Amino acid sequence: MNRDELDGKADQLKGKAKQAAGDLTGDESLRNEGEADEAAGEVQEGFGRGRRKVGEAINDIGDKLKD
Image (cartoon, rainbow, N blue to C red):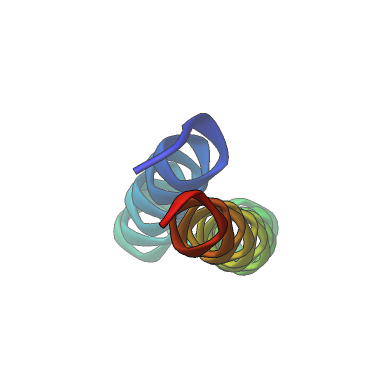
């Protein structure tokens, strides 16, 4: 996992916690903020996963060129 993937996971967890807190307190604004944080975390994690896959593909090509 790279930094974007880890940060994305952290944002998702933070968002879920905010949603739960918003549900418990009846604070719709906090719940909505949590949903936004979770969605942003999913995007960041997806970006990181894509970046990692591209890096792995480049390494594979490099390895094949060495042979």
